[in-house]
Amino acid sequence: MVRLSGGGMYRRRMAESVIDKLLREQTGTPVRSPWHRFRGRSPLGKRCEGWYLAALGEIAVGKSLEALSSDWTIFHALPIGLEGWDIDHLIVGPGGVITVNAKQHRSARILVDKAVLTVNGRTVPYLRHAEFEANHITDLMSDRRAQTAPVRPTVVFVGAREVKVRARPPFVTVLGVDDLVGWLEALPVVLDQNECGRLTGLFDNPAMWANVPVETGDDLIERFQALDAEVRAASRQRRIYLPLAIFIGGGAAFFGIIGLVSEAMGLSG
Image 1: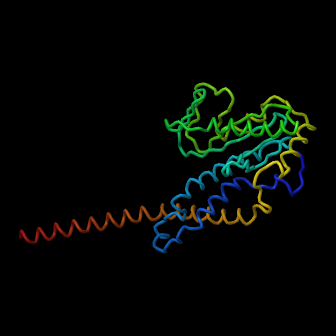
Image 2: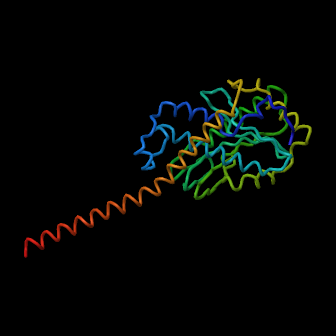
Image 3: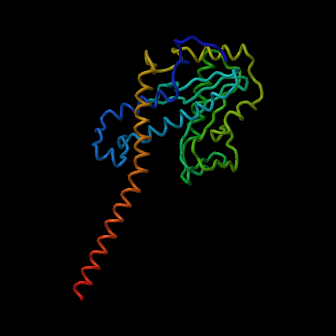
């Protein structure tokens, strides 16, 4: 892995852009009452769950990439300046330059048929988005005369029940997160160490990217981790509360029926 200074884009954290959006949206969410906490109500605002799941997906993919050998360098959450659009992960290594568009769809069935990708039967534009991101990186490299190999776009799914490729898309690779590292390590070598170093230095330069914050991450990530802990605690609480509510509700109904039967028997006697 090419060692980079701490002042560039390499310092950006997994899912940093989407976490920032989540926390901004979450700011206006009312604090839960003690009763809502007891019931296990999620602390997430109505429009926040999608951002939260997106962050978890990006983090899961980012953590899987930590298993790559030291020949690879990974960048996260690179902003490209189009209405908040960012590239979830950009990877540079012997196998070339790879963009990763991470998607979390719990228990979903993913079907890829050439240029059509569906999630539980619903067509989604993920292939087009992934290709756009790769083209953007290609343009950045070409503008700086750093084009040494094609950029490979990927869509990587987290939590899917099945990722079925009926017919491969012409440009984009679609994978489950568990298959990503093996696929990367198996790519043919197209970049030598010097070329990797030149490209990582290029991508590490903040001037390459749009709207980069002066300071990043620590406070942002700590706040996300605190929110994530609350969400997980609420989920655990629901697993306690719901059986309890069913038991209490069922018991109340049972004793209510017994009371009615006893009363009826008394009247008939």
